[in-house]
Length: 598
Figure 1: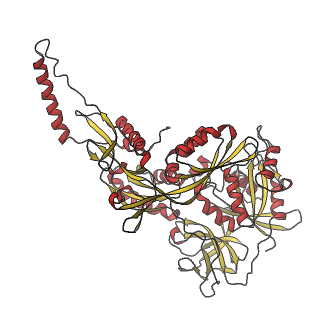
Figure 2: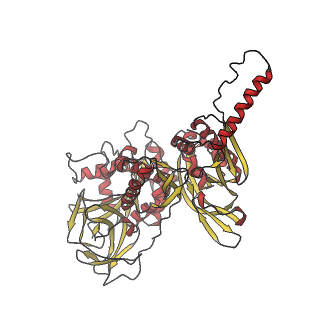
Figure 3: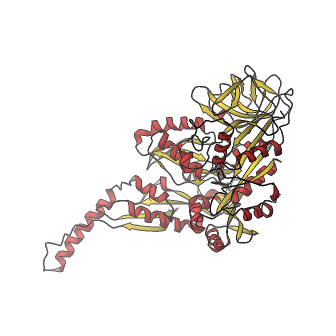
């Protein structure tokens, strides 16, 4: 065990985590130049295109140190986005140390701090690494100051590197060997292994990624998951190189995989503890929690014939993504579909893109919403994430919505516009902190519903891309909520209904009406598009009709003749309006989903 080191790389988005992992893999000779590609641990097209890590990976790197010994360095890569914070925390629980990567040009950002606190909670050895020192705009001295003032770490312990050019990689590997403590644990004790990830393999079932804390596991053992008490027989264990490498056994301190005929990823909970059926450990490892979706939206196929294909595709997608949930749903306007739950807006975006790409589907998403809590007059508590299940307004005693604490880091010059944006989004209890001259750390408590609408895009716009944003859920708070319905020609369009804050209802309704007016084609009769709360109309626009010029043949002559023809036309249009159906094009639904700023 003294020659094993388990470590992770944590950073803000786009600070060069995957690039540094590439250099470490190349330096230790795990990958040769022939089969190497950039972002080698990111194996999805979307990850490469967007430059983000969605699914964390693990790899064992053999390294011959300067002291002459060969060490096994287990790198557990982590996703960088705020939606996947829980997965990051489980990966960190599997490590003894972290490389905290900071961009030499951008300095410390919101998620650098959030991830540092996560690492400190797990009492890990922290090695600050300043990356991108080759950039012309790099300001290493300023970053060293920030390591001292903002992160509270010893600035003398920092390392400098350029992951792109490969400079400083050997120093990083040496630092991992010397500064990260070897793992503790007893190979003879009862088995306790922490699951930090799982991946679906079409031929072998679920491949469980785990870190063995105590004990030993080998092929033929019967293991038990402590959360759901399911038992399985181990078929194979091994380490991660670029491909899976089979081993006789995994023992305390090692990171590797277990294949045990588990059918789906949903059967494996990230953070759960694996133990042996015949010799279990006393209690599960700490820190496990159920991951709850926070953003909800309905997915419908654009062509109703594709419903079966969509159902099969969601089943297959769910095999790989345990945090995604869905159930059947239907809408009068859009037909049969599914109500889905996501960890956040990025997760929603990724699911939509992967369904369209990997399964070749054309889908439409309803307005994203959050889970509201209603206390009814008879004392019952009701959670509502779908506007179709909104309770009778007369039976509601009070409504509550989820709040988040948003932490933002930004240059001081943008402070006014960001505060104005947060106030618009009903932000409260702001605190301000000046970690160093010219930079502000701003925290606000805001309703999640306001943030999922268009906050992130507007925040990036007003800070010209220099601001960084991180959030965590805090609690539910009482709020004045209402169900906003959209009526087209007097008919309710259920797919466009949304639960909104009462003060925002008129603005939201007007925006939806204006968007629909642009998209719905004109008819021979007048179409009213209205936003309504119960029986009260809060917004309205009208699509004017086509009009045949019936008085063209009356040149000169009596006015009453013209009026008679116009009255006759008016009656015809009124009758047509009563029996006329308005077809709403698919583009109209998509237009309503878009934010004001687009």
